[in-house]
Image 1: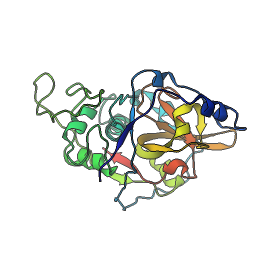
Image 2: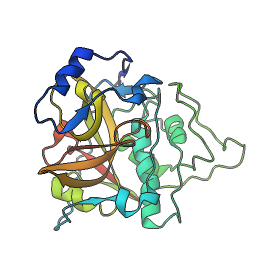
Image 3: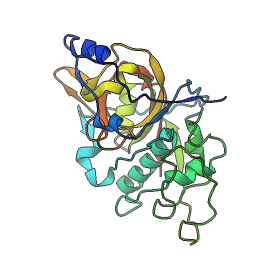
Amino acid sequence: MITLVITLSRVHNKSFLEMLKNIPDLTWTPGVSQYFLDDSIQVSKSQRVNQFTQKTRYVGAPPNSFSWLLEMPECMGVSDTAGCSADWAFSAVGSFSDNRCISGKDSSRVAYSEQYMLSCDSSSQGCNGTSLMQNPQNFLKTTGVPTKKCVKFQSGSGENLKCQTACDDGSKLKLIKSSSFEDVCSGEESIMNALRKGTIQTQLQIYSDFMYYLSGVYKHVSGSLEGVQMATFVGYGETSGTKFWVVRNAWGSMWGENGYFRIVRGTNECQIEQQCFLTVV
């Protein structure tokens, strides 16, 4: 499957924004993010068709709220894909970095290399995105990645680079692998329980109104489908009777709620509960 990529426009629709601001009882604040005033970003335009069918269901009575941002903030980190449609690599490698820290495999959070996965995962398409969300999970399990200190991110302009056989400084690559991965999107309860083990890679459909998200609990209310974005579940909670997931994007800390957003929980909003992977380190 060929994945088309679009560059999101820097020109915002003022009448559309005003319409959003005047919707009654909106659970989120619309506006123009500072992030979109800088470099362009890309998202996958086509639907990513996933074929991974085996599901793992986590059962139990989870707490009413939970977030790794509160439990172990030292294990969290926000990145920026810039002009490269690399959300598939950033969400997978970012969660891998989180979970190695959470589990104690690394004594502190080590940033692993998204660039190495971007350049070396032949089953995906570099800055042109990937059609299958399990591809980066398979790469982590079978090949592994070095640290970001070894291979830094250099594809911010959207350029696909050759797979490196050594670190940037010429030293030998040391590849770290995951043990396995599980599709834990078997309902709201399963995701909530699985989150107690670590952060979780997921994906969602991106609509026009999402591009105006500033803060609050997002729910799609207007606009057309713009593409598909992979992101990372890091927690959940509830505010004023509205249940939400806490999700990390890969558009830097200047976007949304310091790089994160909240989205309605329990209704598969924007298909965010359709398929998601817990990386077992």
